[in-house]
Image (tube, rainbow, N blue to C red):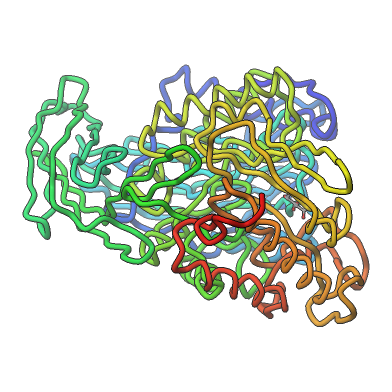
Length: 629
Ligand code: GCU
């Protein structure tokens, strides 16, 4: 359990954890619900959506959780009790029924002007009836809630989840009643130094229940999780595992791929787990041919169908190989903001629009920055044939020595991997962005890298690093020598030459060197431009400046022999509390190639032309074999 007295922002809200932690501990000791293991492939289960209008109470001083002495409330004054005055003498100082509503899913910041900059607690309430069939189990699932969610059902604590970008669920089988259920959440997005991310980010701290809420009904013994994919380096050998959850753990499980006339049966062990391997003739999934197969997984008590693409991703020296062939990742970075309205994206339509713009650019790859985006985004990338880099928000300078912070980061990585490990589109896990080199940082990241490799050996691990620079005779050399790159499969690097560092012209005299025989993805570069702001190419904030920067960046990138991908910063202008310049930024980072109203800037077409040219090239360097190094 977290200590009360952290530093920095926590002091503003020292009691943020107390009540909840105390109540959860009581709940746990009485064997009540806890965050349960995630259920794989929710969309294929029998579900009931709880999305829509939720009743809400905005509670800046957490009076719904603590008394004036800061002690946890357990009586009717606690908002999670949803207590109603029984008589005219009763003192009750809150009322969900008359306190307004917010949409779920949705951030609260863009739903009410008064909440745009709000950081603190908001209470959410939703009532529902549920006639559960006998011998069935019921789970309450959240796609995400930023940042700390404390969940109650019918006035009792269910559990708590920390981390704003990954799913969580609670088993409520013995708690739900046929009528009059009420689920209440306290969602708190106050920032704290020991959190992941920490107090400082270049994105908006959207609060709320930001992704769908679902009731999921499954059999008493159900297929909890499975992983089915080509073995690394193979396009015939399928390898995987499956985990049952429930009393009947010994079962014969059949994995069927009807379209490929493949069907194999394996027996689970007494822990309900089986590891399996078999061969099948399948069309490999690729951006050119995003072939998804219906995979039927069935046992004595449960059956699940998933749509899975089969592909192999690996590295060889400085090459990235997809299904054994070298590949150049023509990418773009994306924040999880809705394409044509303010606020967080969450729907399939949002994903289709954002990925549609990426396709228009000529992309076969996207970097989902700096945190796990919604499942809708990754599944849509599967459908549309776009490769994906996913990242946990180990961003800038977090508390490397704090064991809670490490546990938190590991948990977020685990939830990401658990949710998306059957998505063919997903090829890279990134464990960090622009983190300062130190022994403590290296130890921290090393543990995340090992965890990713151990829990999912079929994918690559990377991080967005920062390199050092030397100058000689008017030429600059950027050296990729970050020690953590030793443990990575793919190196990512962020550079802002021509914007934060030096001038655009210096790109023409900049070379790159790497200590490692590994592929590089230039994970960020770019410049701010306000759509419609025009001038000469030397005038910052104009479209012409951004356009010129892209022209010179691309010329430099062509000269990097170990470059195997690019994800410029960024597809669309996005909200940031760090961007205050009036009339230009107005709390938006303007490095988008598309404005926040969906208008394409001149640089969009520079990158599009480059990617079109590359479309027929597997290795950038192939074209410039003889170009001077
Ligand atoms: C950083 C960072 C981004 C940020 C960008 C910028 O490199 O990774 O999160 O938005 O630079 O300054 O625009």
